[in-house]
Image (cartoon, rainbow, N blue to C red; front, side):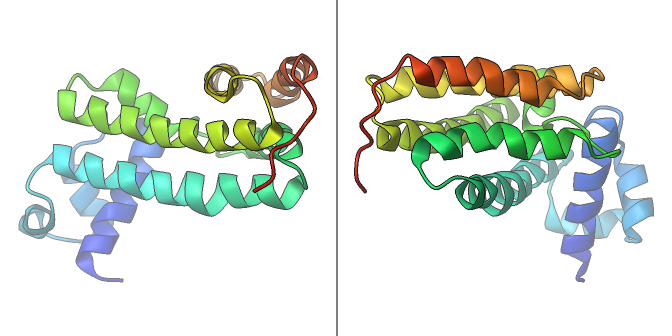
Length: 188
């Protein structure tokens, strides 16, 4: 693994476990086994490193994990929406469950660029949810997607606080939302 990748994966791991503010550059370079100048050659600032970590999190969490798992566990768009909470239930049971790094950074950072990047990542999750809601044939896919994201976020926070059954309860709430919607799925 090259130096940039070591710095990025080390920062990713530390930010997940400790948060951005509690993780100093000295700790990142020590654990990555690189010189401080090497870090700054690849990332001009800690903020730039945080932005790269957010990109990595989106790729790993949304594109390589959540979307494929929801698709694998559900045949229809409605089933995939609900499967998100089944995926979360497995995630919440992990001893190293750390919550949502994107949400954590959004709440922790006061930097406008980092907050904007977090919001953009959350908007990408929203777009995925909106697409599923549209294919499920709901009246207003945007409203359902936003409601779904609120339920997802609440479940993640509850699990971070020790409620390991949060995903199952969130699934129950989400099921009620779907039951109130028309059943005609959109093809495509």
